[in-house]
Length: 299
Image (cartoon, rainbow, N blue to C red; front, side, top):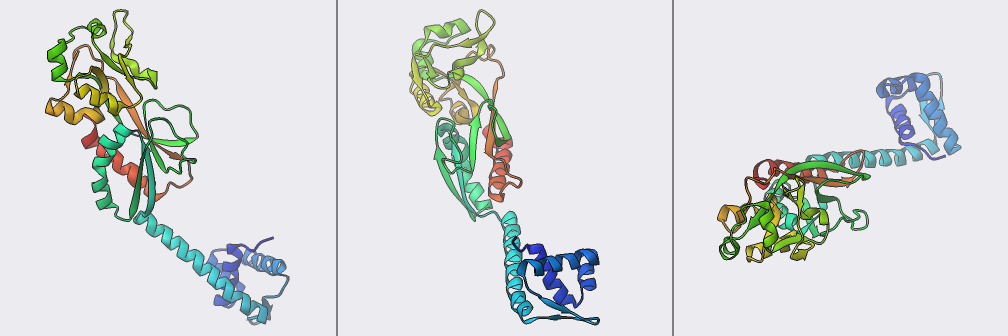
């Protein structure tokens, strides 16, 4: 049976206070509990640490040697605890973040400078994967997932929502005309996803009253690729606000079918392993992302 930190602390406190009664008061324990702890420690070590007399306690030679090591262990534990408190107050170390390329480029990268200024001791490692990854396998601390979450053993926090809009470039509209009805979409080149195909259901209703599912003319697994093709006038795309805000503000992309478009928003979650105490690095980044979403990322 291994010695516990509680036993070491009790032993050291008894020596410092000079009696079990005083040590028990210092440790907020009963005298009998402190006495049992000390006896249990001596039984584990198969040696006598303290000689008990009617007036005082006296360290044996074995007790004196053990006390030196016990104090060193207690000091190391207290130092480790102090360092953890400091890390909570001042997050530090490497933080590995994973997100799909569009979110990484348009939502996270613009925040890196501000985050680093606030938390200069955190080292960021940014990785992009278009699909869902295994956090443990990829050694990832936080992953950003867009859309409805499936059942998961991961802890998640909603950091914001981003609206979907149907967009085209002014050049495309000038060349091919402006769709005025949902059914007009079928006459144009449509840019869609090959995975997940659920993203090919656009936020407008077809003639059957159901959400309109497109048949893409050009497919891609990346929303950033679809955005670039829309900017080049290749076709019409349905994209999330977090990646098209500046394009719409500058007029490079124009929303079409405004009146017919429903207010559909994609939930955006930060996911990480479920722990009893979330690390200060993860908490600092997720909190910063939530704060930014309130003011910058969603329009």
